[in-house]
View 1 (spheres, helix red, strand yellow):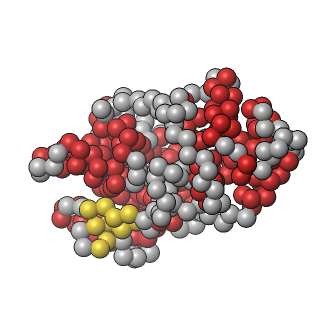
View 2 (spheres, rainbow, N blue to C red):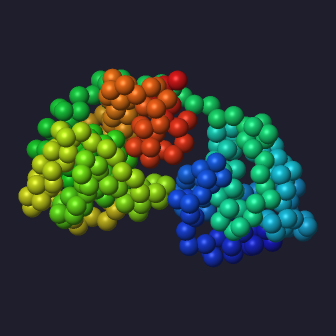
View 3 (tube, rainbow, N blue to C red):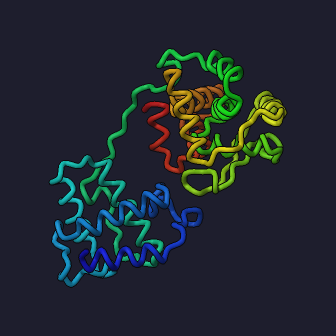
Amino acid sequence: MTKIEYNINKELNGINHFHKMDSPLSVVSNKSDHDIRKDMRMIAKDARGFDIGATHKKCNIEKWTNADVAKMVSYYKAQGLKDSTIINYVSSLRSFLHETGRTNINISNGELGLKREMEYKDKSLNAKGVDINEKLIFFKEKDVNVYVQLKLAEIAGLRREESVHAGLALAKGYAVLKGNALELKGSWCKNGRPRSITLSDEKVKEIKELQKYAQGGKYTMNRNLKQEKDHLSNSIKSQGFNMHAVRHSEAQERYRELTAGGKSDKEAREVVSNELGHGRIYVTKVYLGK
């Protein structure tokens, strides 16, 4: 292990959580704590390759400069990594620097010659030829947990983990609605930020009915979070689709609803972005197209 690996690992061990709620999204990564730590350990390990080795004077990351980040980017480009992957690594580095109070590195992705390429292929249920109502009927008969979680995703465009947490909350009788909004706790969400999703009266009614159904006594609570997520993924995969297709479909439906209600294209995209929990509107382009 090089000295810089040792130093960075030591600092990572001292960070309990990477804060995002009170940080500018242009500064910190939207990735999970685990992924940020994984990226930082890889960056530390590879540092020798971009001329910051075990005996280099910059074995402490606070001595790095924008030029060193540029070296890091050049190294990863030479390895054949895509710009989008390198952007993720730089984003994790920014999170680490922000968390440890270092603000000397402020070079932008553009200045680093990095451009994120977005894929606009329609990945919705409709594009896959999947009838969500047919699948919901199937799971309602076969698996209460999957039905409840899938129905929540279909109503509000939730991620897999969010659906699992919200499903358990319904089964336990916890309040998840506040007026016409579905309230998601930060601990349920990928980016650690709680969010509120505005729902129509019809969807609020659906969630209330879903809670009664989940409390009917057949909702299984003997699996841990990972087991429940895997169970959900494997169950719906066997039916020819995934949770992201459900999110794509809900995003498109919500966009149409907002624009039909008088919102401009930009306003509608901003609402959809916030409700999906993206934070960065460019991610929503993948769901809605250019």
